[in-house]
Image 1 (cartoon, rainbow, N blue to C red):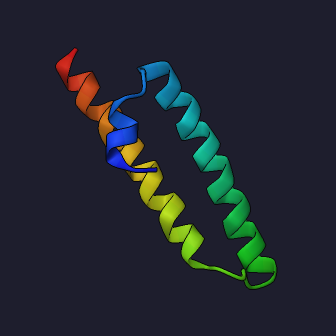
Image 2: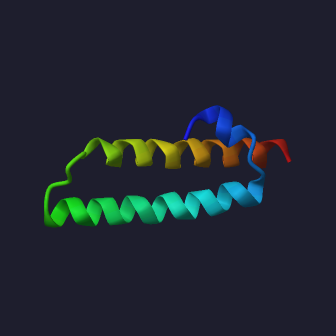
Image 3: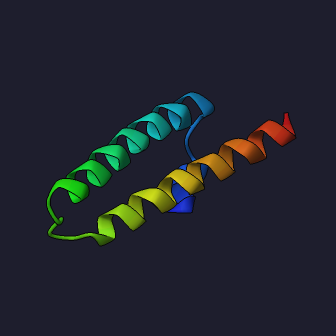
Length: 64
């Protein structure tokens, strides 16, 4: 998910996406620990998406 897409979402949507991405990240990490993933770069992408969402939520909290 790109930063431009994240900026267009509301706070409620961002919190939903954050929880969704965190669960995906947990599943990917667990799956990778059990057996190697076909594309381990997915973990990096999801982790960065979580960071982008957290950053945007932090910015909005400071503005409010």
